[in-house]
Length: 228
Image 1 (cartoon, rainbow, N blue to C red):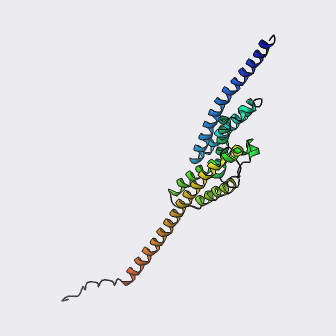
Image 2 (image 1 turned 90 degrees about the vertical axis):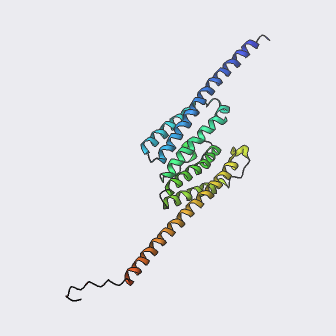
Image 3 (image 1 turned 60 degrees about the vertical axis):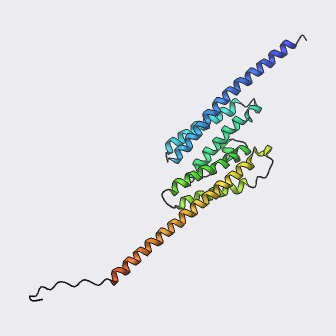
């Protein structure tokens, strides 16, 4: 028992360090999530300078988060940390795809494989939002491009048939992504059919107007001679 006090002091110091690291990580995770959300909002508003600034701040926070927890892997793999990094993936991937740029790789974002895939699954919802914003102004090939991106993401997610303990609940996110994609496909199809119908009606109206003009005989001009 003579060393018990020494052991307890060592344990106390370890707990103090872990608690400090956890508190710092929680703060960083919340701030990281906020920057990611603001980056996504900016790209939807076509505000590229703000988007870039928010992504830069998010990248710096992600680095700080990893560095602060490198000696505490259990805290690094905790839910709140990986959730914040998932938002980081979502923000970077959403901004890249909306701007028609290459999708960032897991290595470039320095995230775990399951975190990367879960982040991609949430990109599908943001791309649907972008498609609906586009379709408000009528059908556009840009909406088709984004739908193709959504399909490509789903095609990868659906092949990841592994236990939830490995993928961190990816199967449920994949099911949600499929539902979002089908709704978006329906919206785009409806918009395209409406566009075709509008053009057909316009052509018919022009045709009928032209035929009507051809069959209308000119009115006789009044005579100017006396006695008529």
